[in-house]
Image 1 (tube, rainbow, N blue to C red):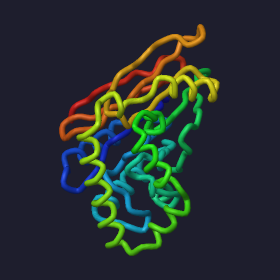
Image 2: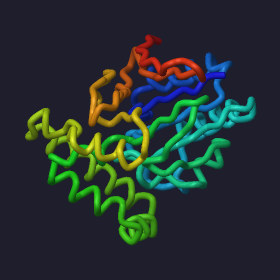
Image 3: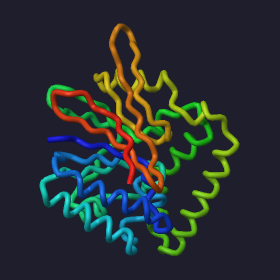
Image 4: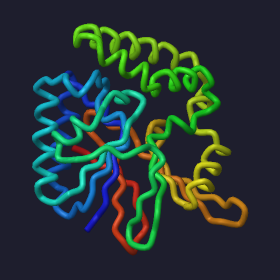
Amino acid sequence: MTHYFISDLHLQADRPAMTEGFLGLLDRLTDAEALYILGDFFEVWIGDDYSDALVEQIKSSLKALSNKGTDVVFMHGNRDFLMGDTFAADCGGRMMAEGSVIHVGDDSALLLHGDSLCTRDVEYMKMRQVFRNPAWIAEVLSKSIPERVALGRQVRSESKAGQQMKADDIMDVTPEEVDKALTEAGVSLMIHGHTHRPDTHRWEHDGEARERIVLGDWGDDHGWLIRWQAGSKPVLEKFGF
């Protein structure tokens, strides 16, 4: 059986090709023990009480995968931090805390969305503290759905404008934070998304071989995944649809 990892699909109704690509992937996961969705699954998520045709289609498809015995696991990203247990349960899945360690056979990995590692982006890290504050989340979820839709559009617009003004290295991970997270977790392998810079990085830290695999963001004609079977190394793959 195989563990699969994806991230940064940014699903949205006006990009149907990406949705079809995701649904096509689900049909091919016939050997999936687990599917880990490591954040930014949707372009914007305004709460588990919101639904539309796209959301219902995704719920139904993931529920079908879960019913076949696949463990469907969600992690918050910086776009879908309002996602909760209700949505996960509707998909036949569960939420997993960022910074969790999983085991595949005799090997282990630290799972993150990845934005917590981008500490050189000081402005974003300040906003991240606000967005992950339970009191702020509760206040937002108390608003009406139209109010939340408007807020989501505003935050996304401001985020895009801010990114255009930042140097590339500021929006990438801070190497020291990567080593710190791995040391605290007691593992040598990290899997994350967020940066949209798919790659496999290998280095040594205090004499220990370490590895960081970064998932890519999806487009209208391709996706990224990591395929990992017990007894073998995880492999980053780009696939077309």
